Length: 317
Image 1 (cartoon, rainbow, N blue to C red):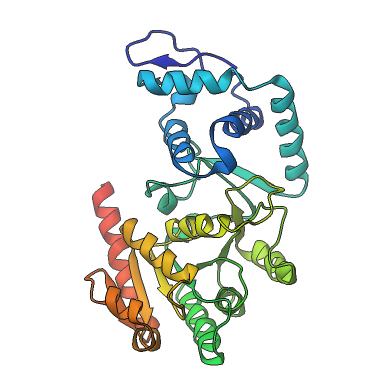
Image 2 (image 1 turned 180 degrees about the horizontal axis):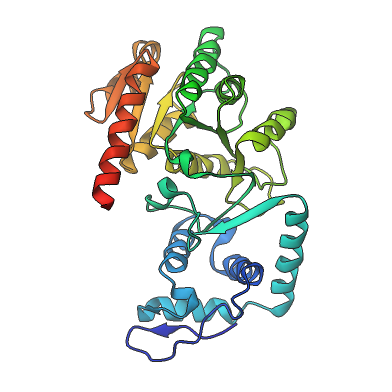
């Protein structure tokens, strides 16, 4: 599998061997299996950073990381690399792609968060315009008013060429994806399962429609089924892909509330619909923060994210 080098070491042989992209991704997956359980937690973040900085291709790194990677490499077998090469070939035949943090087309917004996943798999296509994106999230059991508000909000965002990001769950997520599609706009579904597993199953037709005009993405092993902990992890990616998160309806213990808090930690904007602020104490508490805005119209959301886009562009010049 190659040799890594510590800072100051002259050995520049690449960790990943052949430069052929599929082989590189297969080797990364085999390494991730032994270093990062289910691609979650601090080990996942550590691996993502090392991939992005080029450490896996022979770049220098701190001695602690060298020891960590060498320990992982010692447990990677050619059999597992071959397995992942075959798995990636199978996925490619199903038009599933993979990106890691070293790839130029890894999503720009997601790259900016500290707990970005080391790679994404997906169907459909991510495009540069998806940087202009907003997550629309909420409870799986909304009121009729909440469901209608999510649909209309997403439809109007899509009409303004904003990509709508959500989690494919029942309720608010389904309404948000549907509203964006109805407007002929782009939407991205972030799975809390592997890309081979659509959850809930009744949303398979919706997922297929999203993949045709937008993208379905996942950070998990392709065949992985959902678990109690995978959906909060999914929320981190949903926040990361977006410039901000809109919460439509959500209770005290809702995953949408957890995503709002994650978005604040990511330095993203959070928008809370006015009825939610009136109904929920937790929403009133965070609405007092300067980076949180209570809204009743997309006309309050779009100018805010456009300011963020202009600020980011000026920073990069």
